[in-house]
Length: 135
Image 1 (cartoon, one colour):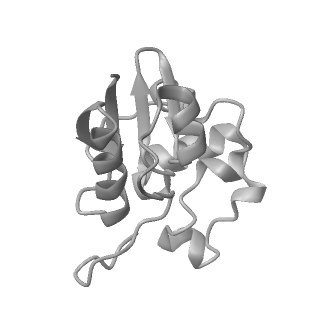
Image 2 (tube, helix red, strand yellow):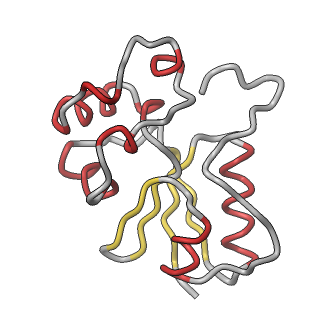
Image 3 (cartoon, helix red, strand yellow):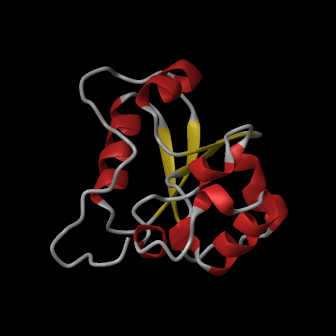
């Protein structure tokens, strides 16, 4: 069993399914609001590891969907500044166990990392509720 610090967007149905799968797999989940965290470049950067910068971004963010931001044209430092100013740009969830951090929820990767009960498919996306208009 792992203690997972799980940064989420409150009321995100996708994050709710991901937390449920973690708990069903025997893990303890400490949910935190991604949008209220006081992020800095040094606190945010470890979650992205060796992933390419475009994979740091939440593709469902209104600023990405509208084309205002092209993740393929952003440097790592620019990305971190943008995400600190607008946390909706961050791919979620962000998860930390001890010193190991991850962004996004790839069930196969999470299973290799800490183990998952294979009873349900849960992906990276967020299914919006009717009252949830912002990514």
